[in-house]
Amino acid sequence: MRDIGDFIEVDALNKSDYYKEVRKIIAERKPDWVITSEESATACIGFHGQKKILVNPTVTFDDLNNVPEYARQYTYGFFGALPEQQRGYELFQSVYPNVVWFVNAPDLSLIDIKDIIYDIVNEMI
Image (cartoon, rainbow, N blue to C red; front, top):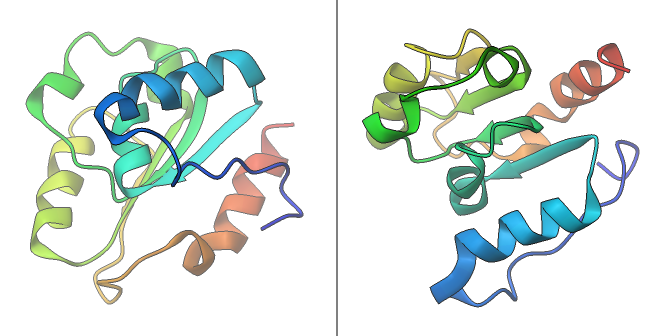
């Protein structure tokens, strides 16, 4: 995945301020793309001024309110086959057009879709 760009390890962040910390890092670093999974992906759903690829975010109805066109166009969602991920997929796809549900991949991770991620990022350059 290093071919895509620089990565920031977020496992060491303070869990009580996790959402705030993730967004602070993005605001400071100003990356072209944010590519993240699980809890970090959930923290980034509502960060609308950013191109992003989210893997298995937890999606709520509140995340789908007042989504600007830029966010709809430049937010990609990828979901594994676990029941809670299927629910997230169904909610996410009601607003975002760039979404895929991997029916045969319950443990979907960034490495599983690295070629897709690479194509998306390079296509948008």
